[in-house]
Length: 638
Image (cartoon, rainbow, N blue to C red):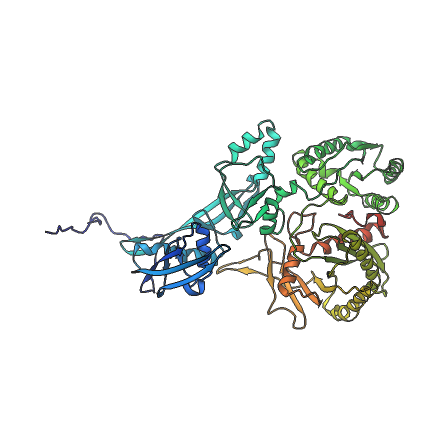
């Protein structure tokens, strides 16, 4: 005899009925059914990641909307039994997809499938999955006073209720610290050096961190103190790589922690600091801080020659610096601490150190180093800049092209003789794009820029040969400061002159890409969702519809801005015999925007263009003459 179960009585009868709303949204399914399949791998594949990867390769068969947990597959469409083979390095894997159930849309077993569809929709809306909820990183609210930021977002779930299938949506906010893990470690180190590792373990183990390059969260289980960014580990495919190379590949540039281990450090053995008497305290504190921060960065630094000046007059500085350089020729660097914004003093120092007695120099305004709470970070940045000026190397990007030379050219007007123009020329000398050769030429109004350019190019090719024992096979030139009306002149006159330069070297025919860089454009870019506009992400490319009909060109949004519209840079390939496809040109250009060592992120133009601009600006604004050739292999103009 079958037992009879009366339906549950869940509704009360007392009280007065009222109308209310809720955050439950009904879901209606157009599909008549959801199809459940079992996926068999022969021989068995233990790794879930490999299983997911193999199934992803066959999306043309399964479709884009799938829910797969490693063995059970849900699809909105019916498949007959499917078999296919996947070849790996060691063997051939046979995969069989077999229908096991046809589920009604209201079945609880369909919910994993619906959640996959929901995650896809959230991704299309630009939301990022952090933990179990989705957040909008483009709508972040910065709480600067509290060093926090808030990401608005949503928590979602799908469930069956008495009324059917519902989507439950609620508002969620993710509060993040602005401080990175490295920032917190620095604070701990300053406060308790003796127990630094123990304090870090207490602070971080068990914490959740977010990686900004992909907005994914991870839990810290332990800290491996015996390892450094230069240590190696094995990837899933068996490749052995260093932590530095791994993050260089996925981020295109070193993260902040990698700045602690510079590519090449130049020891500061003999250097001099000049400062007026009233800035003695600030000078002493700066030198002490330099010594404190240099060690963790891998830079060896000796105590400097201190020169206290009786006043801050230009003549006093120049006489003292000249005297010191004459008596001690081993001086690697001159540091001058100035009071106030003194263009006359700055210009005099740079003329002495860049032309008359060539030596890298660093001018520092005393106000910059007068805030004790900021001095450490300021000293780190200055020390990095000094390392560059001495020939050190901070970071690089991976460019697979061998025997490549990248050149940046920019033009600035000489303020002392407004009729003259100054051309800055900067060229790479090695495959890692970390060694640079720089030159400056001056032109009168009716003198063609190409005349000075040829001299610089031939000198750069000769220097490249000295470093690599071979000439570059491919040369990419980024030419800044050309308007649309000058493009034909560049194509018909400048480029043939460049090609003639190569003829002066026997049996030398390099491939050339000549790219015009335009910053002063009226084009703006926006990203937009369903309800609001935003700023495009760094790396955004526009290469159709609004581009030029006569040239291969593209707009690149390389830098990051917090608010407002995106101001891209326009790149026009006027000449290209280097067999570089549009993809190659775009990727190379974006990578070059990561190599400006005065900024730990991307900039608006390729690094050699920015270096050429800095060089031309220094020469036209303060030097009014060509810098000494002895400085041509150092970034002395930063």
